[in-house]
Amino acid sequence: MSGMKLWGGRFESGPSEVFERYSWSLDFDKRLVDADTRGSQAFAHALRRVGILTEEEAGRLSGAFEEIRQEAENPSYFDGAPDEDVHTFVIRKLKEKVADLAGKIHTGRSRNEQVSLDTRLWLREASALTQSKLADLMAALLDFAGRHPNATVPGYTHLRRAQAVLWPHYLLAYFEMFARDWQRFDHARRAANVMPLGSGALAGSGFPFDREAIARELGFEAVTRNSMDVSADRDFVLDYLYAASVCMIHLSRLAEDWILYSSEEFGWLELSDGVTSGSSLMPQKKNPDSLELLRGKSGRVLGGLNAMLFILKGLPTTYNRDMQEDKEQLFDAADTMLASLDMARTVAESAVLKEGPPLAAAEQSWVVATDLAEALSRHGLPFHAAHQVVGRLVLESVRAGRTPSQWDAASLAAFAPEFARPGVSEDLARLLDPREGMKTRVVKGGTSPSSVAEALAEAAERLRAFRS
Image (cartoon, rainbow, N blue to C red; front, top):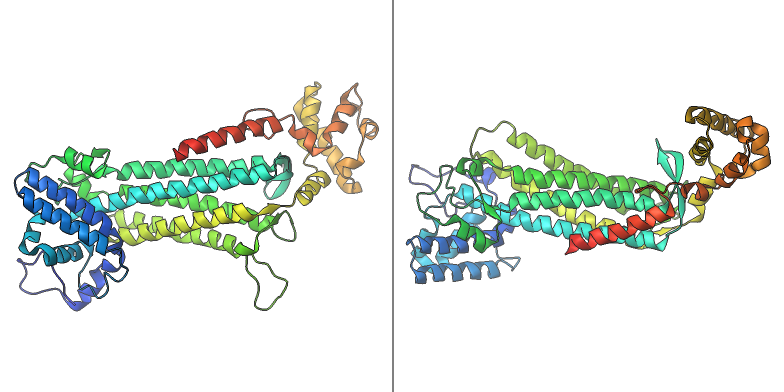
């Protein structure tokens, strides 16, 4: 089972087979091969600049790493590999190509900083890809809003009908959540985009590497400031896992909404056949499995964040082998995150809002109650008193089974003296239509048609900025 080791002189015997099976990581960290070879190419150039490698040697090494990177695109490239991790795998492949010259590449470089570099290179690209897929989902939500620009739906608190809102206003709420997620992933990308090579195992390198030159070659924005911190640091992994966890919570809440809204009890949404499934027993069923999986998969990402927090919480500075456990948490979270964003976008692109049922739900309920109370306040009645009299109107209506549309100016004026003042009953009668009450909410961020139109335009502009 044993493969090539980057250590061993201190030991009289090799590791047991049990320990090797328990500790080896090639099966999951092999996806770092592209980052590992790119980082090693840059390090070969750094070794040339400090005189460890000649120009010819650096060129041979760089070319060999390029060959390995290309060969690794073959899915069978790692089959049967006897190496403990991707780093020893690459070195073994390198030795097959350049013989003893391969031994020079590790001069002045610790695997601690190499792991940090590889993970950072991989993570900054994963973060950027996540941001791109988030932008695609946000675009799908804006398109969905555009398909139903005037649809009225009840907004809920405590899962009880509260106030009427425009459907685009509802979708913009999720746009805002995902916009914040985009920014969190941007922070994760920038946190990873700091170059650690030159830190050694923990005390810094004994060779005068031009760290800024290495950073420029690999596209990093800066270099790390403290070699011990590099060896101990997995905050950038936590940053991605936290961003992914919050984003998955938002996806899970959206999924829960749409599971409800597409149910027979609500009847608002029609999910496409492409994102639903049937029952093996009940022929009539059209199940929202895609949304249920979105809701369920949030748990594994949140679990990855919690696992990583617990892995790190008691470690002494600096490097400890416990930190190897970061990869599986990170890779699984990123895979789940990217797949979930694709799934959510596909659902949003194909879903259809049935505008009649949510409008009827708004019209048949008392979502206009706040509109009526505020109208009374605009006519001079203190809001507390207005709240009380509208509350009595609602109570009377519930007892009698009357909906707002079954009231008019005359019956309102007869109900309470507060409604009978000049112009009040006519104003309130107009507001018994929930679409009229929405027009009063013209504040920035409100649900009036003018405010929503402005918000949609601003959202489209922000989305263009995200994609630029």
